[in-house]
Image (cartoon, rainbow, N blue to C red; front, side, top):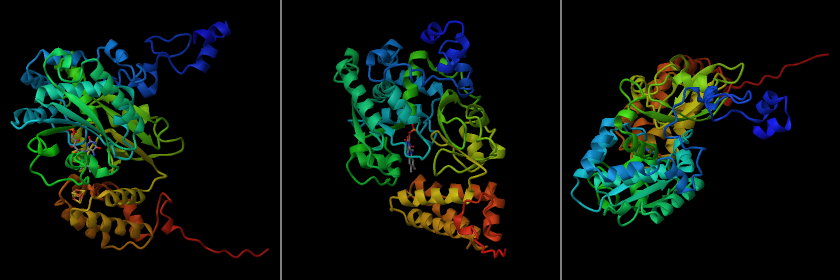
Length: 476
Ligand SMILES: Cc1cc2nc3c(=O)[nH]c(=O)nc-3n(C[C@H](O)[C@H](O)[C@H](O)COP(=O)(O)O)c2cc1C
Ligand code: SF4
């Protein structure tokens, strides 16, 4: 900006404004507004993302200069119980989808008597439309290394695996480099920071299957077995990787921990809703004017993200729905876009908030077509262990495709409900939750479904099987 102003004295506002989107400072500079005042950033509280785009992720000194590894140093001066109670007090719950208390999970592992114990980072991030873990690993890899080391100390684990989906080559590179640098600085190894606590990490490339993200499937994949979810119990804290007690957490869950230890649970809980403290990252994509990654306090209205930060659908289009969290989560109708971003409002509607993906749909999208995509995905990714899952998703897909081609039957909704009822008995959440998108279609988009079923019409003009061609005779 300064160069631009110097080159064109007297036209500072115009030139700087053309060259710069915003300034990092809190005040405007030569007519260029602060970044925080832009609509995309206005609702955000960037704690986990504080270093994103600010530091060189390949340089450990940049991370340390901004308070990195202070949380680990502080934890090493506490007892394992104290660390866990600090994490519990913060209210942190897992960001991978199930929203289970991280502190309680760690306490299960701490109580396990068998050794060695393992900390596992789930960076499989297979939900279409979710890329928050990728952003963290690419922008601030040491935050995750530090979170895992603190977890290892608190639970008595001596080794950890970072399991990264194979389609993420840059995160693999960044995490490997971060682990190596941490080792060189004595932040990992036989005696972390000279404390006598031994902890080390390895990066593992994923096996390219969605269900490898399910924690027991992921454990099987680390063991070099086929990535099929196992039957529980035993739970990972009892018998996880190599049958040893293990803890699986999402990337974002671990990333919160250094901040909780460094700044304290009270600071952590100073943002968020009545019930849910802290922030959550979301990846916004689909039919919105501005896409990207955001971090907002839990409990923020979804409309602030979709309509505010995202600017809503393109001009001339109307918001139809928001698809949160991936193929198993369901579809929120436009009328509910104001719900709070925290688990309960989604649960009340028979859906899940999921791990952070928000895909926006407008009136050019068809809800039956969307359901076809997700049932295809669920069927394609089923590991095949349970008939309820692999055959259930296939049947749902067949029925939906038939409806979309104009051959739907009045009995189809009832059959789909029966299937969904049966699929609840599948072994893992993949099969259990695969019908969610269909069930939310019944709850919130019945009219559109009925148009397809009874009038053989796709209001969004997407379902190709419903396009009718007519030959019209023209005489001159
Ligand atoms: C089919 C399927 C895929 C999953 N994929 C992921 C994933 O990519 N990342 C993730 O963290 N959790 C995923 N989960 C949830 C994990 O099983 C597990 O609950 C999570 O890693 C626990 O971490 P958290 O407590 O920090 O959320 C998936 C679950 C299912 C059923
Ligand atoms: S529910 Fe589906 S993905 Fe899960 S174990 Fe059964 S077949 Fe495999």
